[in-house]
Image 1 (cartoon, one colour):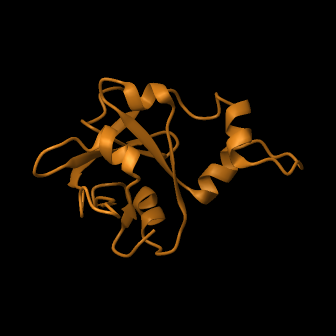
Image 2 (cartoon, one colour):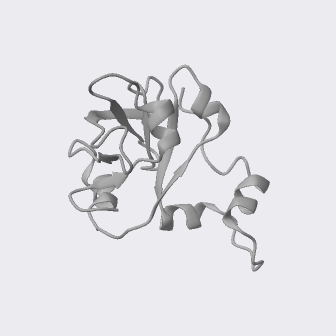
Image 3 (spheres, one colour):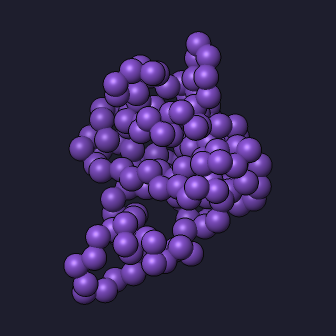
Length: 141
């Protein structure tokens, strides 16, 4: 997490979600039940997902593009984007990235650790996710 609710946007997410043109933008959405946030190319269309706002991509096409969590997110959700230095994780299935409205979840490290199984093995996070494909809600579209 950077200052002023900005987070770096991975190049894959920028390429698949932010669109092209002079002013690439992302739609910020959240799951009203869990409070999980996701960005997409266009606003979410299904319940229980709520669209918050469209925001521009800063430094689009550059080495470190960034996006800013909008003030329209509920305070409890937005607060996760207020603390500089907080680690965030982009999490998407291939289906989410290739959907007609591509999207990716944006989770804090704490959120990610809470939804993974709690076992005492020294497995890598990637292995835990691969073994538990149902731990996140399905594609929001």
